[in-house]
Length: 384
Image (cartoon, rainbow, N blue to C red; front, side):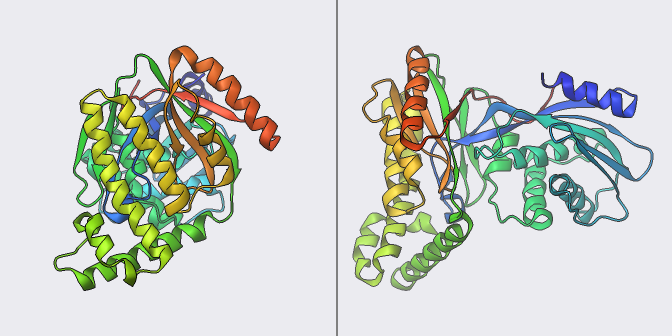
């Protein structure tokens, strides 16, 4: 269906062929959760679910945006740029706004976009929309932006125009992804390194709980405040503490009595998660999937008990895998309180796994479990 349907829509609306066709992928994060805003590491990869763009420049100052999947469109002028009541358009307009604020000069454009990134599954369809348009405009107008500049523009679009206080991981993974690899992104200085994760005998499967508890946003802000409080107390007790990367479990034990029980557990999780990403990457270099999977399980337990951002549905899904020898590792993925679990499963047992998980989830919650088998792919790229 994609990208042909996007191209056909473009030609039917604009009576011309697009200048450029590209794909901007969604992403998963295999380990390193809630570490992005704590100067830790994350380990994302781009996946074979993507947003596709067909685009061409215009000679005037009009941007004609068409959302294929939503059967919706809007025209805006580069000279009169304000937030729209049509929510989806703000993700695109935010990118244009950031480019204009940075002093880049270009004309209008016609664009059709759409794709197969599942909405509400926590695989970042919004970041793919942002990175895809930044990439497209950079190409058709020869703006000369580096990949990292485009990532930062896309993130700024979501922060400033859309008004979502996201970190940089989603846009980074959508741009920098590489086939059969994960990226260890250092959120302190944005340096990164690729680690091979070839899975000839295993599949990556997302199990979407289908729930999103309303606690999410307020609890997310609370976690950030708790981490900032803990960091402040560490800095009062030890010299040269500038981030969580300077802190060890030994230091935590030393000041345990100065932290309330909740803040202590948040600190324990952050220190452990930063360490887990390092160990997991070493395991990948050794082609040791068993250790990698064990670290995924440890992350889930930390998110469940110490960081307290899981929920009964996610815990249930992970618990179902503990006695399944075909599952290497599993954990909740994303901010928490709903969304997906990510599972590494033997391909030979993939169908059995899917059927069993769907049946047990339906029995427990009277709800259909939607699952996605994903492969790790290149980041944003031209396909036509």
